[in-house]
Image 1 (cartoon, rainbow, N blue to C red):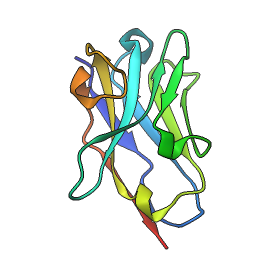
Image 2 (cartoon, one colour):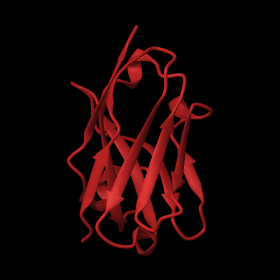
Image 3 (tube, rainbow, N blue to C red):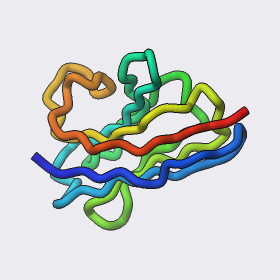
Length: 124
């Protein structure tokens, strides 16, 4: 399994932007699917966006389409989540995940490797 470290979270006002980074210990390109998930208090962990590091195919949950962009950095070991037009409902702990082996790439149960998370807090 790969080790993942998230960074870039913090407080931001509604309408603002943040860029989250997911740094892997090795070549993240070999992990195929890398996803961003989030968990808000009282809610289940939700798939936000995922990218295939070979084909660059991406998927987003409906609530972030047009606002968030997942990308793989030029360096082999980083995946980013650019978050624009943030809303208070985006407030959550955001996690990076890799080593997919499930049936749907936005479903958390399909991933084996997880980072510790980075908190995003959006104020109205």
